[in-house]
Length: 231
Length: 314
Image 1: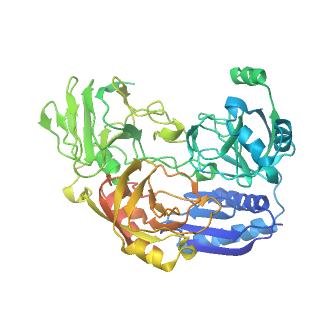
Image 2: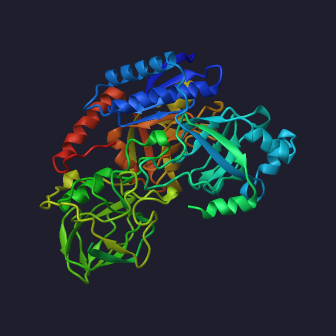
């Protein structure tokens, strides 16, 4: 059961609807409910695409095969259903080994200073508890994970980097995130995983899916090199 | 797989595109595909291909290539003054090239993208159900990248039928002034009403910050102080308004979510026009309602379906 307040559904162009709701007590349960509702809508096969996010779901439909009002009604029902269902358990538990700091984490030292933590304490805080994947978005397979410990919460970079290497692990606002592919990005990068998170030829190309549980564990440079070399 | 042609000069940005990978936005995967679907569909229809068959998309300047086999091809979209071994090539008309023939193109004066379709389609890496090149992710199309000198294009050997005659009224009207019909975006209630009015009555020009992801617009002053928003869905045709007041019009490779207020959404039927806007062009947004826009899109869809069966704007 997730408490969803102030649900509003507004048109998003001629092919879409956007449902937004107030953040529930914590952003993660709201995002998990949005994802749960999105899965139901995806399974119906009636939509062009479904985009769940932190406190919203957007759908696009083909008006020639689905009336706009029916699409809106389906969206409304899916959210109400997801809110009254139990928060779904994670589909998978994924371990992500991370090399923290140095070249792999150019903003690691900055975040230590920002949090007032030693390197060891920062790593402990980041690896302490498992996270839930709140959403995938912004770039292919990019995972927003939370809840992030308060001292580790930090604003984005004022100037986004032109290219952040794949596997980079960063923080921004209330989330920590993992770049499945190299892309431009404004998150503060504290480490990198050698684990391959994207396989373009696989049936499920992304290792991490919305709703999964993710746990980070620190590794050394040697372990990073060894894991990177293993396919 | 037979070789169609060898690239002698790739132009500014030539990629393999189709109708993109639909239905994956929940994984953060943009749809991508042709910046101007109508022109891709017309080029394909001209050579008898299905409308979504992979073809080449040239941006601003065309390419030069040498044919290696006998094959029908057609070009649609921006006129980059194509010549086949010295002879001018008509737009949206199938021509059979012979081995050794050279196709040479220049720069477009109006419009931004041209499509070169080959009978049977051009082969590329198929990733997540599409051959569209997604440059930021380096996947799809020709090894996930733009074409280079010396690349060899191969045939995809898709079934193709008889060439279709495309009359001129199907081809998009290009120029330097664009009126895009748009619905109010989902965040207008967060913005000051006068800002929204200024947006829909204002004149903009396309800046040179241009990519397949989107273009930054110069023009009316629309600075605002609406606070940060949680990331939420955006699409091709979404106009985002960052606090600095310069609207950003998202294009074919639009990312799946963004954090700036969405002031407008270009209607489905006008999405192909976005692919033809070049830096310096002027544009206006004409406000319409979702109901009216759906009527327009339905009419335009059946119009194009007459020559390109299976055509859709999204």
